[in-house]
Image: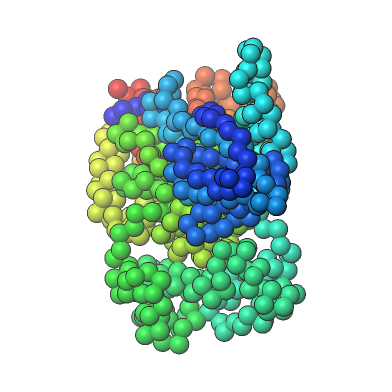
Length: 550
């Protein structure tokens, strides 16, 4: 076994640099200027009026307007002859980092460059002023001015990224949000536009405009997506006949469902459950690890960070996008739509933890809810494998792992810890825990067959994979302490572990036999807590090394 593999890798963001900057004036002799650059283009309107034509769409421009064009966009900038247009054109280089990056690291794509949408910010005078200053000092005569230009340029980039994020925020009244939420929760019922408009407190005609602005869809399109995606979920779970599914999602019969299904997806519902998905989004890193193990790179991972599981026998993800869990529901929904996601895999517990509801995401894609707390990692792997048509690969991996478990158990059962009672103690800033059948507990008690403290063993027998941990007080340590204690420390928000001193300096700790006999092992948090198939496999190798195996 390969016992020591640093499986967690951070991703790296691109670098931005200024290309060229030009000042453009519209005149009667030159009322139209063609724009076609192979770089991202920022247009900042300093004065006058005009318009930008792109793909038969027209964007009105006035003083203070800022517009961001994706690379290779063909556009025409047209001046208003009564109020001639003056604009600055800044091209932006976006480079992936290629040097000084650890092996296995993933290159993050630029949020600015990865979108194919044209972004218009009607009035951003601060950005326009900064671009103007950059133009005036485009030929710096000293290095200090050059550095000022760099700082100014990156301030412009920061403002653009912040504005890009802000466009996902729902600015309408809370009543509009309640109206959309009502539709998401009652899509199987007969709902009229008038009813939804009444909930929002606006007229029916204005409601349609607001709905399109907020969701990007008309009300009928949104309703159809909710119903068809719900039908997909039922098909994936094998829940009933096509007629039963049609009635559950709000259609009068299976024939009408089939028509709507084919209109939206281009295929009939009969073969959907056997579909092979290519663009899958997951909620939190463990389920991303399940997918990577099965040979499918997630299109999107909704996570607290941009860390991912980096395994020596796998290529780093090439195009996986991260969405931070702190993002609003509207922002997450918009980014998932941009990524053309076909399926979302998430645990209901995680959705609720981060303030999300299935209805909010169902308009994007069907949701495969796979419980985090009620089942163990093996069943999670099997369910995900079945959902993406990779059951055979999942079962083969589990078979290989079970053989590794037998070999590891054989080694450890012949070591000095074979008859020891092992306690897994977790010290967090706010509480003290004893772990059970999950995380490192799975490896110790189930893979290796080591003995748990009696109180923990009773809970494992009662709850199985659902038993995560139990919270205790310092005075309870003697009731749970075994012959050996494995300690995992969670630092506080500032990275400090000073809170452990209250435990390690207490008489309850110093009186424990394992402490007195120096049978305490401090384990690394990142190496021993992750709960997914690949991490469990690595923990198995580390456990053999810890207890004297080769």
